Image 1 (tube, rainbow, N blue to C red):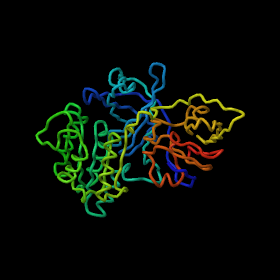
Image 2 (spheres, rainbow, N blue to C red):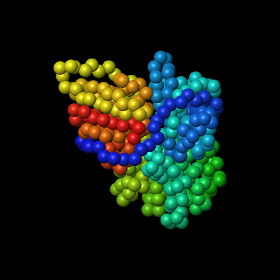
Image 3 (cartoon, rainbow, N blue to C red):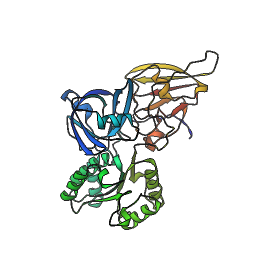
Image 4 (tube, rainbow, N blue to C red):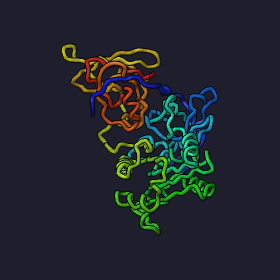
Length: 389
């Protein structure tokens, strides 16, 4: 964790919630469901998206506001948002969505966001057709590889469909890890992709609790199995771009292994649904912090929707910018509050700071002074951040 000073950078679309209606529910597996929201025409432009992006959902359950982020699992369709919700053990929202959610329910849905959502800095993750076209121009084809686990398949579905449709020479390999065949989300859609692109799409199902004909496709993906997959199944040297989506441990193992094999960090895109660190909060509501008039306080000033607000924070509290800001503005954007989704992104325009976990911002964004406010704490007596930047 290093201390940093701010620098200029480009902007991004401001995160905002709107209430949308659930118009379709489709059971994917016993413990996962696809939820379709209809977007009215007057909001359609605000909900345009590109493959790989996500939306945050906000709902009051049992008197408490719950926010959860889910990747959009379909190719861009105007007037429609589709997400897949897998029931997590003890997960309040995911359990409710799988057991009680009904068509006609209204839920607050944030406009599409993502780790790479800057309008002036479009990357290959959120413009799959663009990367395919670029690779075709450069090499005559595009070979992309994705590793997904469980619900990590949701953004991969949209990316794979877009890439394969963008060029007749693009190829896509998918390694998909689950506990058993019954847990495979979008099994029918994956089969359809294989039938539609038999020579260009390959999917390798790895099942941890179910014996398969090939020992390589049975059991958990550990370091040894990963090395074998990369040696025998995946053409590492011939891969143009990698997409990794799953739990922290698997994604980190993949990143470390690919780095050792000389794969450039620029060619690896990853998304986490969890950091694997339970001590990180799943949400913040602006906990009560009392300012000591006789003690040392830090002044946090922030711009949001063109309005400036200011809040004092006791230096001894060592609280994040997000937590402090929520005490005076309940509409400050956030979703995971764990350094994963990037919804709370803002630009520091004055002051110094330290940022903890960061699994959402790219290096150039960090270098330009952008931070995840849920993970950023001031190290100067005053700091100014701009959520609108």
